[in-house]
Length: 115
Image 1 (cartoon, one colour):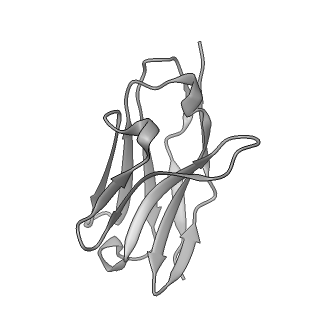
Image 2 (tube, one colour):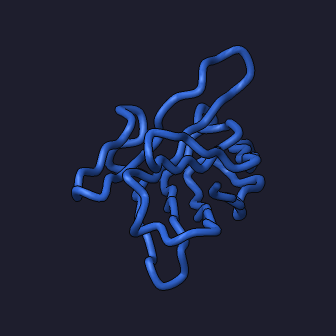
Image 3 (cartoon, rainbow, N blue to C red):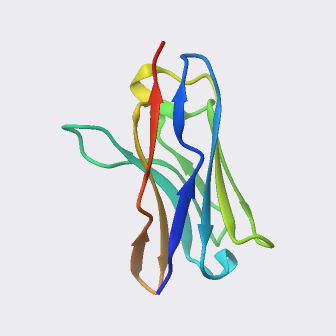
């Protein structure tokens, strides 16, 4: 079992930045993959960014060049640095961990980009 707790969401103006954090109850270095997904009303949940234990990193096309995912093994925390935010980035952002073929999700944190 893995518990994930997200934080760092909020309201930001277009062009602004936010950093999301995801604290895991287990060592993130033992996960097959960790990442961030998002979901806005009426849309399916989509990949934002993820990395695997093998060193692969993947980003959704709409966030490439603006968002950066990183991890701190000592703190068991994964971060999502979001820059140049746009109104279309508005969504609930979920942290995801994969281990032993099982997906775990956090409760989500709301990000709203609006002037």
